Image (cartoon, rainbow, N blue to C red; front, side):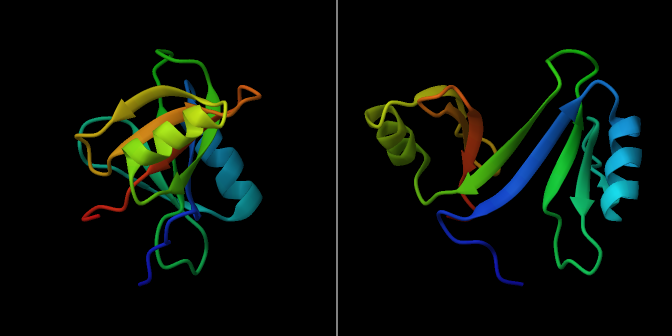
Amino acid sequence: MTLPGPGTLAWFEVATDDPDTAQKFYGNLFDWTFVPEADGFDYRNIKAADAERPMGGILGTSGKQPNHAVFYIVVADIEATCAEAVRLGGSVISKELDGVPALAHLRDPAGNHFGIFTQPGD
């Protein structure tokens, strides 16, 4: 299986206080299937029919954050990409450099939220 390279839109996440309804809606609308993560929080990986790998996830927030959807782009270097985003008029919301994968949440100059991450092993 080939993993997406830098600059590729590679993941999306729907965060919601009602993950069961979101799963039913998106599953029925797009014929997606869902596989729950086994590490103790409500995260359901999304897989399209005939896809090799998951392409996104539904995060159950238990009402601890606003409902939202965000897309993620693969980058080679989190810190360098954050610095370039700021130079271009964006801002950094948060960084999680110790996680797998390492990721950051950013805003573009218009205030739109998006994420970046590095492939595990990069």
